[in-house]
Image (cartoon, rainbow, N blue to C red; front, side, top):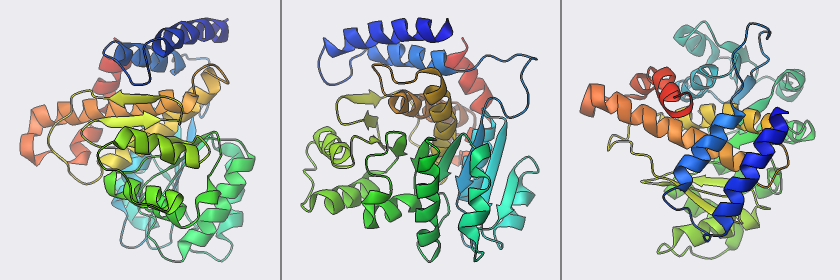
Length: 322
C-alpha cells in the first residue's frame, strides 16, 4: 500500500515538473523534499538492527583518516550500521574517532578484494573514495566496485574515487544505481576524460548533462554555490541556503549521507518515473546545506565539519520530519 501511495505521489509531482521545462523551478524544492520524506523508513520497535541500512565506506589510508570517518559517522546518523574498509595503518586512528564504527583493516592486504567481498551481501550501499588516495589501492577498488555492481546496490563515488573513474570510466559507466559527486575541478577532469574536448565553462548545466549521458545516464551531482543534479534527462538544483564557510570534510558528510538516502530511495521508490538516485542526491545535498547553515549560526568562521555533524539530527528533523 505504501509503495502504491508513493507511486501516485511521484507521478503527480513529475508530471507537473515535466510540463514546466528542463530546469527546476521554485516550487520544485518542496516537491523534491516531499519525495525524500516518502523514502525515509519509519522508526518502530518491531525492526531489528541493520534493517534501516548497513553502509560500507571504502577509503582511508595513512595520510587520510578523517575523510572516511566523516563519511561513515554521517551515514551512521541515519543508517543502523556503518563499515569502513581501510588500510591497516588507518584503522586504529579511525577506530579511535568513534567506537560505533565497524572498521576493517583490509584494504592494503593481498586478499583485500576477497576480504571485502564476503561483507558485500550484508551491505545495502557503498561509498567509494573518501581518503582512498591515488596509489596502488585503486586497482583493488576497481574489482570491489565490479563485485558490488553484481549485487545491484547503490554505489556513491566521491573524492579519490572520482580520480579512479577519470582513469577508467567503464568501472561505473551505465550502472543505474551509481552516483558521482564531483566538485568543479573533479567535474572538469571527468568531462574532458569522457568527451576529449574542453568544457564550456559558461553552461555547467549543459556540460553536466553531457557528462551524465556519456556515463550511461549516471546520476551526477556537481557541488558548488548551488548543487546541480542530473541523470542526463533533467536537471535539478539544490539551492537551500548554507553558508560561506568551506572547511574540509563537507563533501564526506555529503557522500556518507547520500549512501543512506540512496539505499532508502532504491528500496522505497523502485523503478518509478523518477530516478531514485536523483531523489537521494537531493536529500543528501539538502541535509548537508542545512547542517552547514545551522553550524555556521553557532560557530561562524570557526565552523568545522565536526560541528556540522553535530547538527545532523536537528537538520534532518527540520527538513524531513517537520
